Amino acid sequence: MTNTAELSFKPKNITKRLLSALPERSRLVVTKRYGLDKNNERMTLEAIGEMYSITRERVRQIEHAALQNIRKSAFYKQEKAVFEELYNHIHDFGGMVGEEELLKHFAKDESTQNHVHFMLVVGDSFKKEKEDPEFKHRWHVDVSLSKKIHDALRKMYKSLNDDDLVPESEMVESFLEHLKDVNEKYRNEEVAKRWLNISKNMSKNPLGEWGKSDSQNVKTKGIRDYAYLAMRKHGSPIHFRDIAKLIEKLFNKKAHIATTHNELIKDKRFVLVGRGLYALTEWGYASGVVKEVIKKMIEKHGPLTKEEIIQRVMKERYVKENTILVNLQNSKFFKKDKDGKYSLGEALKA
Image (cartoon, rainbow, N blue to C red; front, side, top):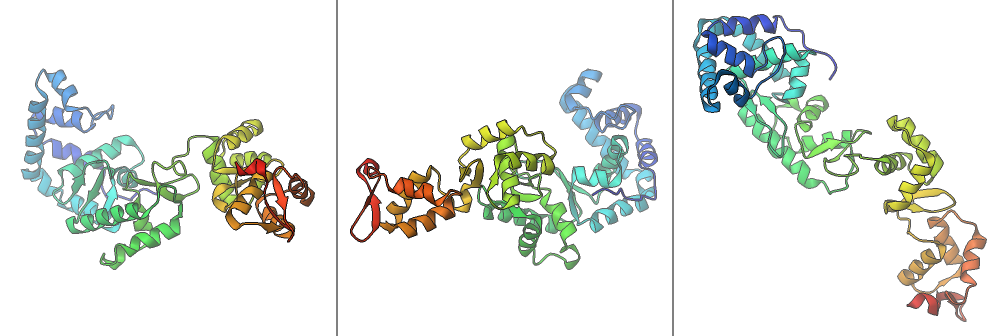
């Protein structure tokens, strides 16, 4: 989301009028608590308590009473149209939205965001769900809708395997399947993305693919993870020099060629399939040198003819046919029977 909402009012003017309903100390406590002064700092209960030499609990009591007094005041009633406008924005935005995204929708600068946040806290129509292990801070205007979204997000998370990566379009489609009884006006890609962004357990990687937030395929930390994503996007075996270039192109990350090669060697997600050529293990390529690839094939399928071995190895490795034949000619490793089929030699049976 890049555009901010066109509000018909100035949030700072509204909060100034609302705060005028309070005595001085209550007004100062609320101002400090919600970052409504010039430095925009939202202070903790403890910090405010130290400032006024009172307990944390006393600050909480003052804050609670102040909010109640504002809601009962004539100033609050006079701003009915303003709160209705905020309500309509949230309603049009999907009925529930993450706090950070919502505040950015209303304003770009932190100061104005703080004033809008205070208005949401004061407003009777707005309900805040605090951050927890599953979800970010979020606001909603419909309790029933909120429950449906939370339940759907939990189901989506349970449906994901640890290493799954799902294109965003598929993620949205699957998510909306869990929300069939939600009002049709909310059943669109834009709203679904906002709801998905509330989750802390699911998120997107730099290529916009969804998965579990703690997966190394989503929470990219280094060259290995970027190489994995780059190779998935490329879709076929690629030389480590080109992998480094692709990382720089896709992620704007400096990737030294030698470092990239070293990182690929250390990670089981990658398989060397030719001179400097790497594939992803998940594509079905077997690990090991040609001899080991042949060994695994014979162990899996039983004795194989020369032609069968060549055909299968060429699918696993970018090597010359002669390289395969040289390995088969080593009698320590492979034995040829009267039917022309190869089985394991004594050196590989152990």
